[in-house]
Length: 223
Ligand code: DC
Image 1 (tube, rainbow, N blue to C red):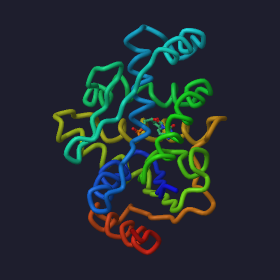
Image 2 (tube, rainbow, N blue to C red):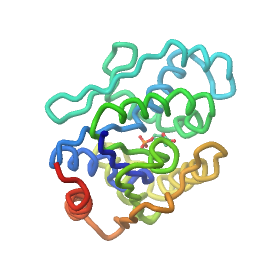
Image 3 (cartoon, rainbow, N blue to C red):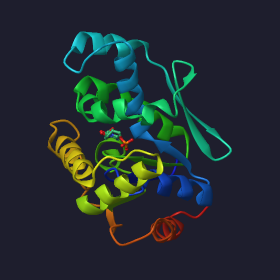
C-alpha cells in the first residue's frame, strides 16, 4: 500500500514550494495537480477552443498526453511531448485555468490519472480537491490557508520580481475572483476536508510551514 499525503490550499499559500521541499526532505514524490489543469487549459488555448465548447474540449481531452517528470528534484511538465513547464505559468493560462478546472469533463479526465499515480507511488500531492475527492482516504491531509490580503501581497511581490508591475488592488481583486470561482463551482468545490490538519500560513515563512508539515508526516510515516 502506498503512503499518501494530500496538501490542499489556494494559490499564494506557498503550496508549490512547500510540497517540493517536503518531497526533497522525505523522498515522497511530489505531484502538482494544478499543472495538469494548466496543461488542459494551454492545449485548449493553442487549439483555439473556448470554455463553452464542450465537444471540442472533449476531443482535446481524448488526445491529450500529460507527463510530470522528476529530474534532480525539479518537476518538468510535458504536454504532448513538449516541455511546457514555463508556458503553463504565463498570464494567458492564469486567466483561464479556473474556468476550465470547473468543467466536469475536465475533472473526470484528470482525477483518475491522479488516483492511478497514487496507487503505485508514495506521494505528496497538492491541489484543491486532493483530500476531498482524489484521495478521501489519504494517510495525511493538510489544508494550507492564508488571508486573501496576504496572498495578494505575496503575488504582488512575486510579480515585481518578474518585472510585472500590476497594481496591488488589481492583484487582490483577481485573487478574490479566482477564489470565488474555485469555492463556488458545482464540481469538486475547493473546501477544507473535514479531517484535514489546518496550517494557517498568513504569519509563517516557508521554512516554518515545511518544518511543521514534515513533523506531521514523520509522526505518521515510519519508513
Ligand atoms: O495550484 P494552481 O494555481 O497551479 O492551480 C491551477 C488551477 O487549477 C486553479 O484555478 C485551481 C485548479 N485546480 C483544481 O481545480 N483542482 C486541483 N486539484 C488543482 C488545481
